[in-house]
Length: 308
Image (tube, rainbow, N blue to C red):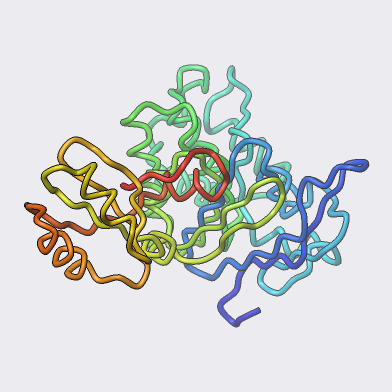
């Protein structure tokens, strides 16, 4: 664990009867990260988040927040954590302000000034007196984040923050998450199935599938691991059959007028030279990268590989 680590899990495991839903997951979230936690339904994401929050007891492994072991001193560790898990739940007939008063009474108290500040941060000042049943889905999500901000946390856990939002609401939540990170210095740990959102927001990601950690690292590092070459060429089918004979060249897709290749230790200029020597007329060579969505689907077995 480095000095910059804020949230660390080591060999975190959870079994329900004979079924292992989280299997030896070791995560490291650094201060200032916007950290994406990805995985298909049933991967173990929600169970992992509940263990981090002390809502579910781990079968084995450890969780530390700012160096404090959650298992040994849950209150001190979780004092540094705010969370919105499985959608914020409110008393719909009460106002936003009255809901915050209830939450802060249950959570150890917050000053009126802090409540006003939290509402200002999430953009709900002026609407706190309205009953929650007139709030849009996006406003309810922002009120949940305001509640999570009340104890001055160092890290906020957000479970599917864009779930159920229209495009405008998604844009507002993304802007708020960036603001929490850049303007308020908070570390964000967010679970999401909206991969384009994660690609835009997150510095680092972890991908979980069937309880196993498949990848952990930077988004940029994940995206640049797979680089592809799109070749616009006459007679792409024949060109593809020709190129498949060379080591280090794999034809991923044949489309009208073009090929998409995966190269391993082969330079694009070399590919161009071989095609020209063979008499193929090459009109364009362009390197493309695999999208986060395609990488995710490939790693979790969701689809066959696709070029971005």
